[in-house]
Image 1 (cartoon, each protein chain N blue to C red):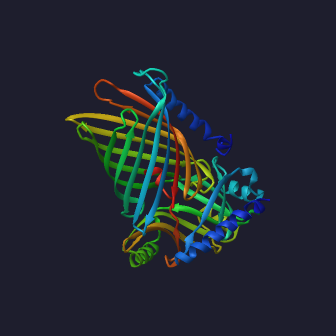
Image 2 (cartoon, chains in turn green, cyan):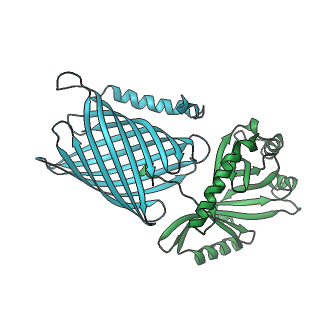
Image 3 (spheres, one colour):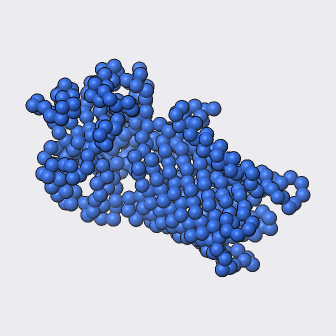
Length: 198
Length: 234
């Protein structure tokens, strides 16, 4: 039902992306999120998040549409960090993300990320950093609850920043691996703020 | 009804309280009216943007009223054109000109404007700061100089950002310092509005715009405008 409802919007996003691809070569980030009630979330996803954060009273659920499909995301605040736990519509875990400060990143990652951004842009400013974990749900559960695990999982870093190339400044979202090696970059489409400025 | 049906149950009471508060402050005042406005803009290349605004004002009630008959009347029409240059992400430096025709004596006022504006994100809130200076020229009147600062905030009523076909709440607060004929004065403006983001290029808003004028010295004037706006980008 949820899937049917979003098919039309999804197609519209795809058409827009194709049209824009003709005028810009840079990969763009398309995302649309809508707040939903927890009752509309797959039981499997709800139970997983509640077991991860049993003391969290304020878990917000969102339906997120992007070019890859539709996902369900839980967001909550814990120990001064914001966690985002993403699932597919059936409740299968995609990844867990947690906000972090730049100086909390491993030194190797800090160095490689800084080197990449310095090489790519004339100037840059980091706005948001998220550590991203993917892997078996039970392994990630142990990682979050106990702080460590012997099993294997993947760590990446998602960084949102503004970068200036020549005279143009834009917002980007880049993904780096656990060593800080660049994986991909998407340009974030800015909202038109005329109704706030004029 | 459709307008309100989209707003979430949690945020609607907050919006109503703010609107009522603004309304309460204003109804005991001198002037109440409606002000429809159309605001359009288009880009010239990647760095330049032209923004123009057409605004009408109709007074529905005024007290005291010096004339005879109904106190409701057409007040004025203004057209404004502003050219802005992109000075970085969400930062603009611009200059513009406004012409406004008053119905009272058919006179025109002319205003030159200079502004610097910047946008800022704060979680799900979108903030915008505008610093503006202007000079107003009117026949048989001394030139009026103003320095203005306005802060605007936009909150999505669904989710973490305002997407197409979603509603948002907007508020702005402006402080205006005035110098005319060697005398200084102050004006404060407060707007609360509900907006609908039809697409990235179209927004429709309706809200209350309260203005407290001549705050220094005697002759304080209060105005409350029901503002309806359409913003379109080409």
